[in-house]
Amino acid sequence: MPSVLVGPHLLRKQPGPFRSVLVDAGFDLIEAEGKAALSHEQLRTFLPGTDAILAGGERLTAEMFAIAPRLRVIARVGVGYDLVDVKAATVHKVALTITPGTNQESVAEQTFAFLLALCRNLVILDRDIHQGGWDHRLVAPVRGKTLGLVGLGRIGQAVAVRAHAFGMKIVAYDPIIDMAFEDRYQVTRMDLDELLARSDVVSLHMPLNDQTRGIVNCEFLSRMRAGSLLINTSRGGLVVENDLRDSLVSGHLAGAGLDVLNHEPPEPGNPLLGLPGVILSPHVAGTDSQSMSDMAELAARNIVELYHNRWPAECVVNRELKDGWRW
Image 1: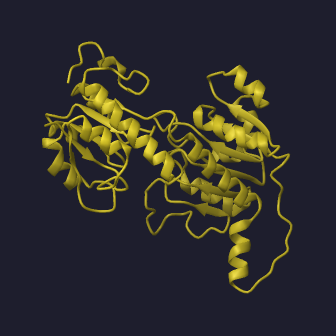
Image 2: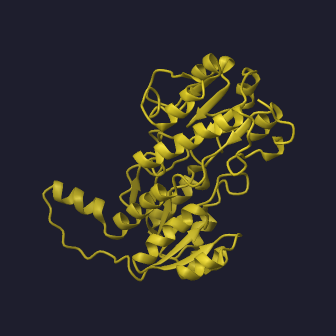
Image 3: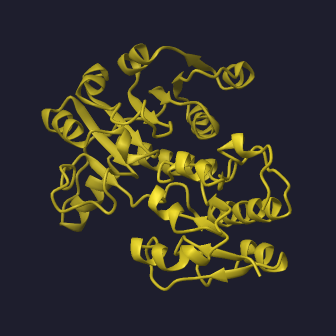
């Protein structure tokens, strides 16, 4: 019987469509104890006997592939795969899949939650009331503000739909053009420098790779409009955190909403902890109850499709494996 190692702790020993998909296809589920991503030690224990993994926050390195001779599929429960050594996976003929189209609405809602909380000063006002205050300071409107989307893929577009409904001006930077969408939601395309100079809020929606790592540095931040806001619901590695702290402390940036950090959970010395203009959430933007179910089900279906040697082309990352790949 083929086996699947369940990575995300929110799925382990929990009901859901993903479980039925796998069990009905004849898979045995391996489910470790604990309420965190699988540790290095747990991966070393379970991977040698695993045929596929529903992957969450595990770091899958070349070392992990070397000890997993049976591994055929890494099915990411999500769309990011920066924790996976794709080159090593390909060398070992392990198909890597993602779940496009399953969590963009959740990320967009979290992005807008940050935007509204920062503009309306909700966190500071709430804390003030709990401490006996009743501050009637004026807050900033969202309507009429310019939202700069750095990335206009599925998630960026979902954010744009919401921004349009709130009466915001929308500008975007992305190499791929979707004229029909941009016309419908009145999105103005521009280069990155112009976007940074014009935006009241800059929201990041790009993958983390060698080209984008640390892209939000002191130079990037200095080009942002004075008093603007930064929102990051993509990957923590996009941002140089010391540079962001300096920009916030200097007053150049008014605030930041961050769902992701360089180290998660943050280490005690993280430079962003304790700053009054920073709102944090624990990397949950893409995982509300509905999106988690949808991502897990599609990831499970990807495993089953590949088990039957059917190639889910839109979901496979290392597509060069297709010719001649067999379970």
